[in-house]
Length: 316
Image (cartoon, rainbow, N blue to C red; front, top):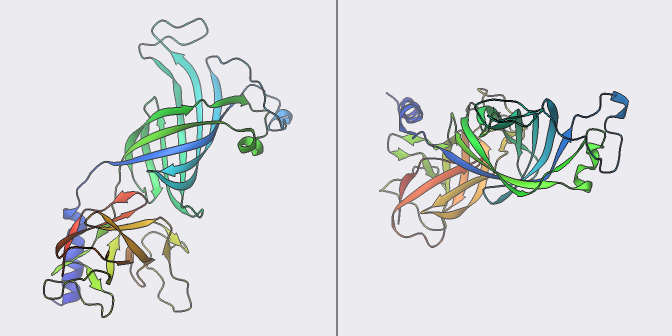
């Protein structure tokens, strides 16, 4: 068996066996949250009022749309959109007149669409959730392909409630509420560092040889990681297709922020690109922090706020 075949075999086994399925927590903060209440039925009156509008009183069967901006994920700046369509019913075992009787106490049900972008506006991932509160994650795309889980809601500043006659183009100007959503996500795929027959697929940057006990890494050295499952790139490459190899084609750069830590310390990430000619394999170049102690160092790669399992390499 050639070393290339052995490498691919070990990499596949790593994908199937070595990763630990675990819950990933995303703390998402949103701003400019506005609820647009469906209270008119004349289409000519929709979205025409440039000023804050007073909606009709809320009742059962009242539908509404919520729009707000993702501004932070896990304490770091981000961009994105949250869009909720729901129906209020105010289920209660002892409801007020005009609301719905039920054994459960729930305000209503709806479906949320979340679009997560990098700080420079590139697509990272999508989550869809819905149902009664707390919402169940129904699926995802991009870096969150096939995800499941749930989320909870913590208000920070009350949402503004208006009528659908108000112009949504002025939402940020007129302002709105703020809140935090805690996603407990179980991804279908996690970022991972590939394994070679000799250990983690982490290479010296100067000659592309593996980091091994016979040739350990050094502080301040640039290393190269073969990684998987880092998500969408620019330009976009369809899932399952190899990254381009032509010298005239732009490198496929990972849209998400990619972080590498060495013994828990953040390392300088130099490159985060699709590996030419490979499908779902990425090249991440990073510099070993200068103060890294000699011994076995713990390496972890995080992309789209999802951490990989840890691997260890020798450092001299």
